[in-house]
Image (cartoon, rainbow, N blue to C red; front, side):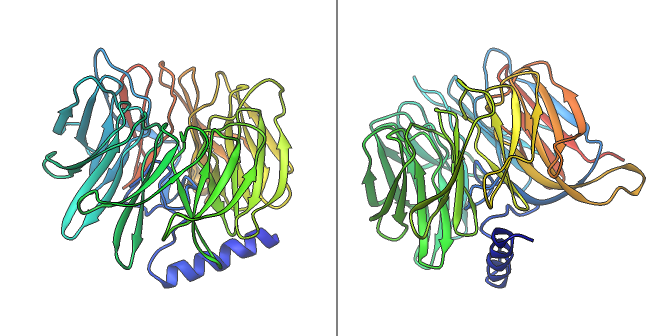
Length: 397
């Protein structure tokens, strides 16, 4: 095991002792865009391959551009035409829906709790943030920004209650009390924020991470919003940083993939894309000691978290802007459990790639392409396509 892997194990054991790993989504929920606080796209869920279709549902005349979120057996997702839905994870039937006037939902939601109430928080492309009662769809509170919300919120649990961290294209990050939407602090940068903020629980304290369109990785104190570091990344990005130990990983519009030390605020390494002239719009997922990321140059790539070397690159049929999700999988005939990355591309291909080698372990052709990745929870893999279809898969028999 590398030094980075040892660090990850130490962080994981410490987090488990406190009641949960902030860098792994629980097996029964996918409560925010990248599954967990650390933005890793990694789930504790286990699946038997090949996956099989559980159900799919077509929504006529609309399109999806965000990853679903899942909790308590319900899938929550907004479409580009302004309808936000709650549907059953079991069969896709409606629980409730809400239609916004003159706005669409381009970003994922996030699920958190305020006392005994479960809330679903989501922003729209008009800049309005809403908190819905998860059971009824009633609007509990709203918060207004001055720009489109492109990245899903992150829910941070603190000793003083749950906090909603949400960025806007007005170049600000807001920290809100989930109970009533009260603004607790706000941090402005020099250009748009399109990513979901992530939180690294480091030896120096909780740090909020923003990869900005101003060409910097911003490291903020989670309690106050004060900036601790601004690391140059030489180009804009809207991808969500993924945390592994004290390091964070993401790619840019300029086609460079970075590993940055959050505690020191120093670049650990960088790697240029294998094909020039293409960008990273997919957020990375963490699998063991690898950062796995989609690439617009029609490929999925894996980088060593330790040194940025590229152990594999898997060609895909279409651009890969959707972010991978990592799960544990077994195959037929007693194949040993291993990590796989579930990926989807612009051609409609969905694949489970062996995280160690990049070899396909399962594939499915959905027809319509994907701009957003998979959500994984309760034995189901859920994806929403650009042509308005919600897909749900389960373990094979």
